[in-house]
Length: 195
Image (cartoon, rainbow, N blue to C red; front, side, top):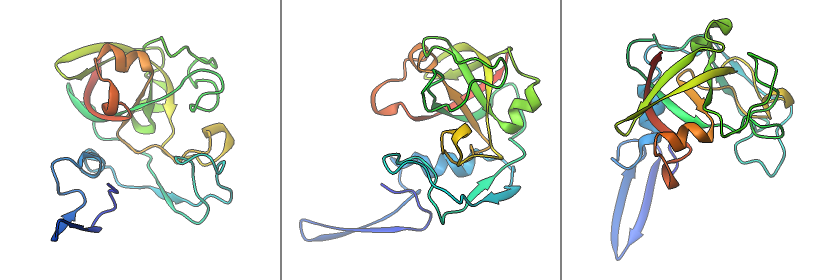
């Protein structure tokens, strides 16, 4: 279901009119995650791409659409709430250019992450481990990149929009170590802290 705020979805099922408000149902966590986890970090600007990504890319930027940019991230605590997304850190993957911290690509079998711009803190977390917790498990992962919240929609960013301010973009190895599989892979609520 689309998560556009305020969208009404009308369905006629077995002669009964059903009305669902996106973001209000227990099964629609995407809108809830995006809104709740921004925790006071407001957009710092807007990016309007002059060129979109490849037509075959559903997640790429679209011409004519505005994308918010963020210079901040929510405050880091001993248990910082975030949204974990899946990233391909290998050459040719959806991560775009080599990692900011070391100028290298990384195998998806490595437990590595990219943090939203505010949490990346101009590289101060490069090479350091963070502890990610979900589903009653926790795992250490090394920060190797920035999930850029200020720039995007270009080749170095694989034509993807700027990151939201509350993203921990993780390799497949992190997802596997947390036991998150199947339809849950893609976006998942987590907590993290500096290790």
